[in-house]
Structure formats: C-alpha cells, structure tokens
Length: 358
Image (cartoon, rainbow, N blue to C red; front, side, top):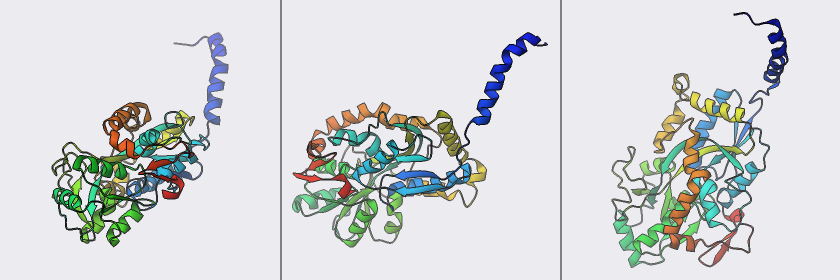
C-alpha cells in the first residue's frame, strides 16, 4: 500500500520531531553513579548491596561509587538523596528504617518517604540472626530468658542504632519474654559486632552474612534466626518461633530508590541493568560471587522487581507497618518521639540525637 504524498507531508514534521527527540535523548550513564548507603561500613547492607553495585557498574559501563553515610537511623543518607538532582546519578540503598519505620518513630523527618523517592528494585529479604558472646552461659533462647530473669539489667544488648530493626526486635523480646536488658547503641552493625566479640555487649541481632566468619571461628554463638523457617546455611539454628517466642519474626530487606522526579527512562534502564546481572555471562566466575554472598546472607534475591519495594516500601507498607506498631504499643512507647529535637527521639528518658548515634 502506497502512502499518498499529501499524507507523507502531513506526517513529516512529527517524524522529524520524533527523530530529533531520540537523537537528543541523554545517554545514561555517562559518569560515575553514586549509591548512598544509610549505614556504616561492615554491616548487613554492605554484604548485600556492595557486590551488586560492582556487578551493576560492569553492566552499565560506568562505575558505582559506594558512599556509606551512617547516622540518624538512615535519615542522613535519605536527606542527601531526597535533595539530590533527580538525574539518576545519586541513588539510595533503601531499607525498612528509611522507607517505613522512621516515620512512625521520629517526631520530624527531613524528607517524606512517601513523596520524595521512587522505587527502582528490591535486592533481597534477610532475616535477623540473634548472636551471643560465647562467654554468656545461655546456649538457647530459653536459657537466655532464664538467665536474664535471674540477672535483671545485667545483660548488654547491642544494636546498630535507635529505631533500627535490631533495636525493635530486642524491645519485642523484652516484652514477650518479660525480661530487662540494657540497650547499648553503636554506630552501625560493624561496631556493635566488635563489641559483642570483645565482651562489652553480650547480644546482637543482625544479618547472617555479617556474622558467618565469626560464627565459624567461634568468636560468637548463634541462638536463633528471625525467619519462620530455619535457613539453609544454618540448619541447626532454631527459629525464634521454635524457641519460646511464638509468632516472632524479625528481618530486613534491601533495595534501590531514586529521588522523586527521576526520568522514567533512567529508572527503566537501571531496572534492566539489574535484570541483566542474572544473565549467564554475568553469573560466570568471578562475577557470580555477588550471588554467592547474597545466599550466604540468607537473602531472597529479587532482581528487577520494583514491586518488591512497593510492597514493603512506603506506598503499600506504611499502613501495615503502622498496624504492626499499634500491636507493639509498648515498643512504640519506648521510642516515643520528641518535639524538642529536629528529628530526635526519647528512649528510656534520654534524648539521643541521630547524627551522634548512627
């Protein structure tokens, strides 16, 4: 079928405009892409996200700069990315504290997780593992509960920050088990782990991948896993649900978000790059090591799925998380917001500034 000359002339301006737009569309990426990480180096976020950043940089043809910005339970990093240019060159490694929990625990926040970010992809779900210093006489959760009841206020329980997942988990253990411990706050999971190994603290919740080398070396002991089923890399470790804390589950997820207003074309390209990491040519050694590290971290890898963050991120999860906090009213009371601080919180009568604690 021939197109009449008059029709062609009518369509010509539109065709020229479309071709011009494609020619002028900016390439991405043309420079280093920065991933802002909301926690100190050496924690669970690093175990999951750092090898993915390396692999994604290979796929996209530009390196990914990995920028640890701990503090404020993730809010310092969140503010950096929320205020960054929405061009795809500054991205945030997201987690529940930034996307859901903080808005229910802090009086004020420097950004709105509902409005200031767009989800890109979810990397992994990771259950928390409860570890102890080997000198602690308790070898099971029930023995821990019995010991804590016999020695109220004498156990130091470390966490990576006020309001972090490990902190909420230890508060819930206190409520469900009827025990009293001393919460000791560190600037990230790495320093908290060092404290447990050194004996300054006796207990810590965190990602299995962070603890595995120290478990194998006998520097720490695993008491229970926070998933509802035992995990393959630690089949001998019981769940919290099995260990006298029925229905208790604790863990985290990790993903990537961009500032609101980032072009949809950039978001799609990052998602497609993440999917291509799954391709056989990327899985071949040595680049398959990132998947091995994720498996060691007991994560469920969810490449290329933005709905992962939508399900556990602000749009769909805020109400569900609010309901969860309502059920855990005693936990929320222990983390009562403070109106006298930019975004501080009161904890057991003391005011902690997030920037100082991490």
